[in-house]
Length: 114
Image (cartoon, rainbow, N blue to C red; front, side, top):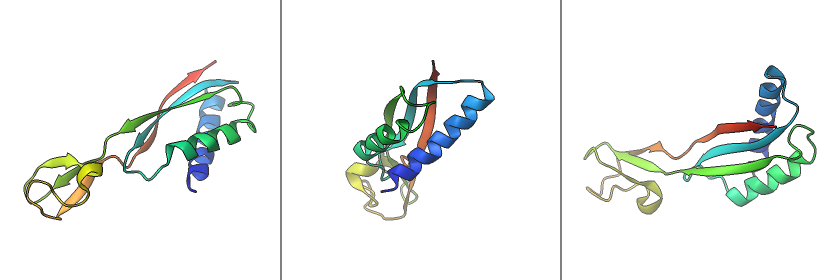
């Protein structure tokens, strides 16, 4: 389960930001998560709820998650398509010369301070 490692990394980043801005409590954190990232939202939320109980900064915080669609580009026909629906094979030309353009991210989009 790499979700716990992600939450640990995010919490360290939040602690640094809080220290920089003299924040004592964070109300919510909004993450942008790619649908092709392999992150399981339910596991991430469970890890957040576990970890926030051990942090004065995050103890009353809410985790919000937004999905970034997976988009793949085909180098053969120069088309883009939905990654999750079609996978690696281009639905237009049936070629496999493709790469993920977006949808593998995990970004902190917004932090709400109390």
